[in-house]
Length: 281
Image (cartoon, rainbow, N blue to C red; front, side, top):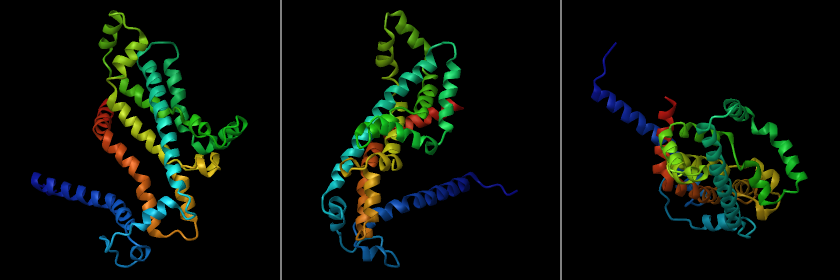
């Protein structure tokens, strides 16, 4: 077997990572450049990666929609309200549950945790219709409640916070109890404050999942005023006169909030991911 020098390994690894990065970023680059081109330039062969001229009309079409009612802005607001609300409730409830399962000793603790984990094995498609019937019976269709309440907490969030808090020093909690701190104060002032990386990671994952959620809003939100970004993209793409440039502009605008969120929390997200991986080893 031929031994590869260390320098050669570094070159091969750098080449592999560069190629991987190009393959991953190429669709994003295509989306961005195509959003500034007319449809005729997008479909031309070979594809011109640098637009000849900035075609701002694509963004007007994206915002106005094919019927010119500018419902896109309302749909963005709906997605922000739904995604942010679910993210906040998921962080709060998952951290409380994870803290209880990680730091409190009670009978059946592991059984409760296993039952929570079992729900992760159930595909959403199997409970979608029963959940929809519950929403109908509670008269939550075409309401923010119908979009938010079914996703206020998830098993993955509980799992992630429990695993993170298992590594939280018990001595710190014990010292706080000795000093007379109540359990709510310990959780809010000590545990929650020092769980930033895990909370940021869970926030990004939860927000992204709900921002991209298509099936549930498609079922629950029948009125245009309550539709979210994914449903807007679907309806925009199905329109007879929608062109490729406007569709790319819609996709570009729809992805901006996630990019901003990731860049804002990237430091905590990467730190939380690394800490979570280390905790599993």
